[in-house]
Image 1: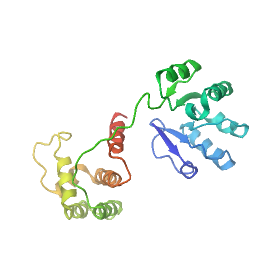
Image 2: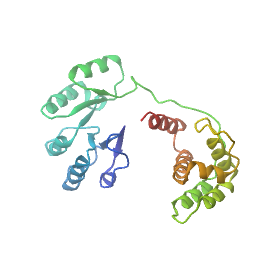
Image 3: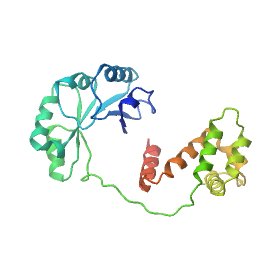
Image 4: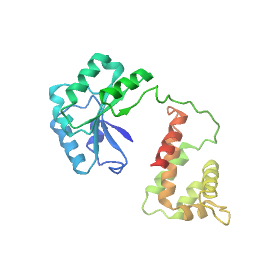
Length: 232
């Protein structure tokens, strides 16, 4: 999974293990000493580096030398400049990814040039997923997250925070009684569910609820993220 990293994120500790993701450096991140130091640190931790929407310039050579992947936008560069960039990058030990592939001809042409990864509408278009769900009160979810983050909170205190909100209670009991856990006896209370699933699990579940509650997040994104997480 390629994860976009701003300059701020590059300076932080990695979120996922090195074998699960590629650190994708956005095109507006300058190749200054701070950035290079962050990339050196990530490489020592065995993280792979990708340069997004790449446009070649001499000052970016130190970043190219640290990169494992370079992503080239076919639509932005055009066919001529795209091929020029492929030739410029041949001396470096990087794998090329072609972005914005809109047709089979573009896919075959970029592959013939030596690209090994591809993305674009030709391969997959965004899907709009509609549905109905019982909304969780955002304040209740925030309260639950706060309770989970408190090291002094007990399972009973976390269960009490859940029990104050009907959609939260319903969602947790539905999850605890799902076929995923194959319980012989039915879980009937938040306290039982928290004890069985664990505080860490409940905290991650509440985080997902918070993310899915954002109005500006397309409904299909969370489902796709969960599918990919499960496959990983």
